[in-house]
Length: 459
Image 1: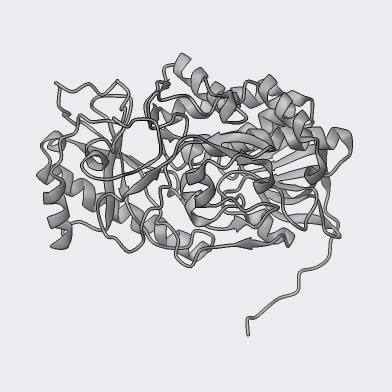
Image 2: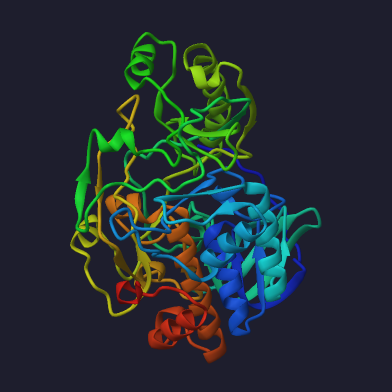
């Protein structure tokens, strides 16, 4: 039996009363907050770090996934707030918004642009702030208790959006949720400086996979030859795999390379198994991620010519997380829906990333992926079955594990967040619950804000 202590009852000050409260300032949260504010809603966004961007910045996932389809004609599938964010970053020298399967960015510029987007939209930002528990009115979320430097407070809201990634608010509201028995591994991304990539191979051009239109499974040799957003880092995959078998290198994926600068290389490689929704597991993963980074960098310096003079300069502020809790919503989208390109009358976003489920069992290298044609995403994946006043956006939406493998990536999360923000704002203005919002009005407003709502909107 766990031990407990009694906390004294106290009055909690209400610090704000808003239309839309967004918990989490990652790609989904920034897009939700800006989208809601541009409808005219009063919006507050809470972020645990001292900057916005989530996995794109704190997690240092600087190769942004999900903007462009992998097959010819390589169409843009996400625009709206997410697209504006990256375009503005490019205008400031912090992104290359091309038609490659992943977009290279600079996290420091992405942070600053996110600040500008939300401030210009009239959003109130509270950094270093946790949305701890929902304020419940029966089965309706009426806001959140928060914790920050000022202590404990309360924010009342007509609609709250869970953009935590881990579904923290979903779980604490009593809304149904699920989690896989095994979770995709986490990754501590890192950057090294002083690299000498192949000067004959350009790093500043898009990587385009030679795939014709139509869904297919991506396997070798294309899987390895075109797996990185940069192709100027020669690496002997077989030799690295053999080193791992000898115990010289820890469990790893890829490695996958990116980055805007020729001599500064971003690396996605570490694979840490654990449950990021549990504080002790997340803490262990952060420590293990830094230790594994050191071992991989040591191998690169010792064995890979391009890295012989390289030096580790940065690991992510936090470890990258692919999978934890998922809402059980009004609709559960499945991998079969993605493969079949099932159409939805209430589509509010388009996905295009492969069914990319990183293996827990496989120790090293790449993994086969199903590459779909662009597909609709239903609004109902964001709506809880039994709790009102609440929406979910980002990787905690209502999907099975295969669909999550596609829809968990940043651009798709931004598109879903944008839709959730607009729906929340329109519902708050009309005095209706998120499940009852006029979906045609949501779709019209999203298009007015330059979003791509369904596959018919693609160029």
